[in-house]
Length: 173
Image 1 (cartoon, rainbow, N blue to C red):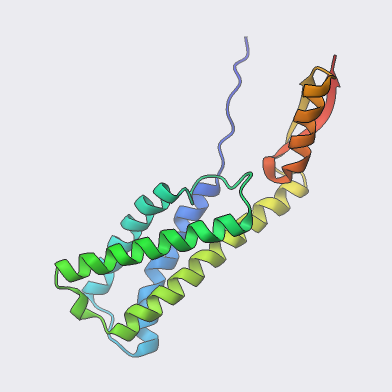
Image 2: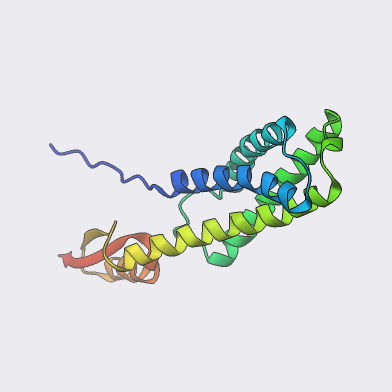
């Protein structure tokens, strides 16, 4: 007997990698633009930001494959996850008294830059995956058993969900 193996998406891995790189570049970038020195507090804040973003991003579901989710929903979830992460980081900074290491203008710029970079990376990865799917990469060819109303409904739903990665090649009856 041949076992059916589920396909695994590389999207969450790409999003995690892009998020951590952008978060770790965003704070030093904001400090550089403001003219504030980059020091060990910057590194610690970036690491805490990555850890919090991973945890909060998982809670909000931004690292799940976006199949069936509109771009507007993904933008909303990413924005909520980043805002929640940022508030959590501010609270950590206040309770550890490390918030004074950063100028308020740097903090504000990091919030804006970080949010824009996260949204840009998630939407770029989404567009790339949709383009690959339209060009046949990662598409699973599927035949539906049953040429009846239910079979046609399944085919219709698969066709309407263009990013599902399923291409209907026929029916068995």
